[in-house]
Amino acid sequence: MPANRSAFFRRGIAAATALPLLTLAACGYGSEAKDDGTAKVAAGAKKIDGLDSVKIGYFGNLTHATALVGVQKGYFQKQLGATKAAYQIFNAGPSEIEALNSSSIDIGFIGPSPAINGYVKSGGKNLRIIGGAASGGVKLVVNPDKIKSLKDVKGKAIATPQLGNTQDVAFLNWIAEQGWKVDAESGKGDVSVVRTDNKVTPDAYKSGSIDGAWVPEPTASKLVAEGGKVLLDEADLWPDKKFVITNIIVRQAFLKEHPKAVEAVLKASVEANKWINASPDEAKAAANKQLEADSGKPLPAAVLDPAWKSIQFTNDPLAATLNTEAAHAVKAGLLEKPDLKGIYDLTPLNTVLKAEGDSTVSDAGLGVG
Image (tube, rainbow, N blue to C red):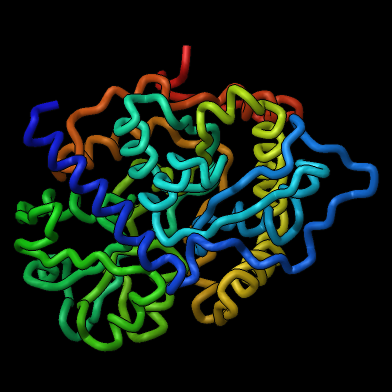
């Protein structure tokens, strides 16, 4: 990696990981999820791999409903037995990668761009993607009084959740495809890219400080409820309208030392997705109940219903789309072309899927070995 690009990459990741950690306590992310009493340890259950706890990270987004449902329905705790399922909630991926790097969490639900960045930054030594969770659920929502067509985005202020997160990279790539120029680090250029915590983006929109946002659900539908208009669904930019939005990652050391615990979390994730797809209305309610437990406030139906419809829940990590998303980060200037060989280890997941009688999934040639 050239020295100037390497320095830029380090600055960008540092900015993306350090700043949010300073505000986690204030915004309610990065702290433990509230225990609502639904995940009780079964009588006679034993610890897995001798562990007292497994620390699992996720976002307060509907694109992480696999995790929300897994927590709410007690699937993780059931599979982990007497080993406590402990949870941490994050606003965006870079801060979760920081937590993974520091061993504050063991396993995390996360978007592809932070997973790529984390893998590259550690020289391929810290994390593995071990499964998928969701596809879709990302939209460009704008103020219809200020932006009436895609070309009107030029010159406007558009929010993304965090520098270097999945939506940030996707938006920067889309900007480049329009032929416009933006400095990725500062967000300044033909479009002003404003990195804003999802939790405060609706207020920023109402105040007029931003003209729109490229964000995941439920933030996108919250903006629509405030009068915003969906100008673009990111799924429309992808073949078959499928792209990975949520992966499951693990610390490599944890995977090596505690394979049974990792398999238990994957079993719970597969169980959660199976129930979500079989009982979508009940699952939607369960995810919303967990959002309420975590944040103190459920989503209203006007936000929850349209948001839920735009997300597909799948165990497939859609590995073939990962290289494309990495290419987007390269084009944005956030990353030198990476070698992603070894970023996946889907052996534990495929073991679980085979046991369930389900189809196995592919690592698109990016697996270990």
